[in-house]
Image (cartoon, rainbow, N blue to C red):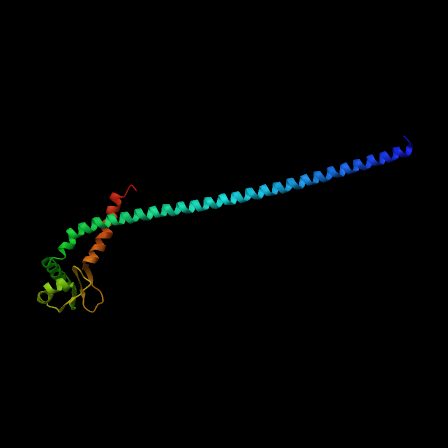
Length: 202
């Protein structure tokens, strides 16, 4: 083989090696870029999955809280209705039934008129519900006046279903012994007692 041919072959081999090295470098760079793209994609996918999991957990927790609150509200409502039912039945059979009895109401009013007369000489105002007013109105006014020797005004109040209200006329206040006021009074007093005794272990 001539020297000139050998040189040509060597030059060709050198170029082949250079081409191979360049190709290897290109492949290596491509692989690194591919791996980086893959890693970035995996990281973003993991991040999105985590964000999705966090959102699902947040919604689940919020849903659980709403369920728990609904249960608490339902139990409180049930407890209140139970207490009110017990009190209503008890009060209807005792206090309220008595406060619809005209003789009892009349005696209570006359007693209070006497007590008022001990400390003040002002005119008294008595409020009765329509039914009780028809039964007691005029007669009660006359009896009270004779008993305390002071002016007594007996008026009708359609809002009163039972019981009565009494106070100094013109003073702007009355002592409320109506059924509604008594229910509220006993509901607060005995409702708390029932709550403690029956629902203490909740």
